[in-house]
Amino acid sequence: VLATTFHGFGVVLLNTLGHHIGLEVDFGILDEVCHEELLGDIVGQVECEALIDIKDPTRTAVHVTQQINYLKDRLIGPAELKVAIDAWHPADAEQDAYLRSLALLRLFERYEALKAERHQVDFADLISMPQRILNVSHEVRDGVRREFTWILVDEYQDVSRSTALFLQQLSGADNPPWVVGDARQAIYRFRGAAPENVSEFPRDFPGARVFELADNYRSAPPIIAIVNRLAALLETPD
Image 1 (cartoon, helix red, strand yellow):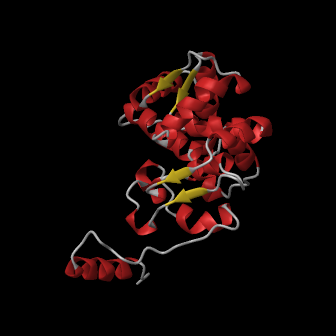
Image 2 (cartoon, rainbow, N blue to C red; image 1 turned 90 degrees about the vertical axis):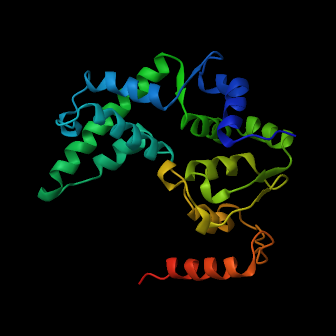
């Protein structure tokens, strides 16, 4: 039995399978501070005036880190971003946003290139890289699926979209996943969580069976009644 987070499991797979995408076995992992520091260095090397915060330049690296994490949590890399920008024909009112997007692309490309040169990965890579390995090599993917025949995921509403797609690669007809989640309990949107994964589950995993857990054994009836009323208000647009 292996009990871990998706990111922890990503480390396990990269340690054993990273060579399939040219990753050295002694790769380093950038934490958020190192991520921001690396981007802070790159800001001075790349043309990105459209993104620089003149009042507080140090905020630029933090902002760009957040933007890159947002994209990578949705499996959007520099190549995909470039395609989207190339297809964009901005109106006059969109010129500033267009220039900021180009600046972000330049920073993103340099960040990924420099990270690869240093044999480093960031937290988002711990999901996207294993997903890419399993997507490219069906032989490797099938081997992983045979090794992990039962997959249980708790708090599914708090995983990112890239994590849900990673789970697709880990799971097949012979090892379907069992997940538990409630979109109304999502608390990590600011970290890239995609609560819609719960509603998308039947589409992500065709043939899935959905069971509603209607009985609450944790709370007293008055608390449940109040929470249900609050949930109903949150689901009402008005």
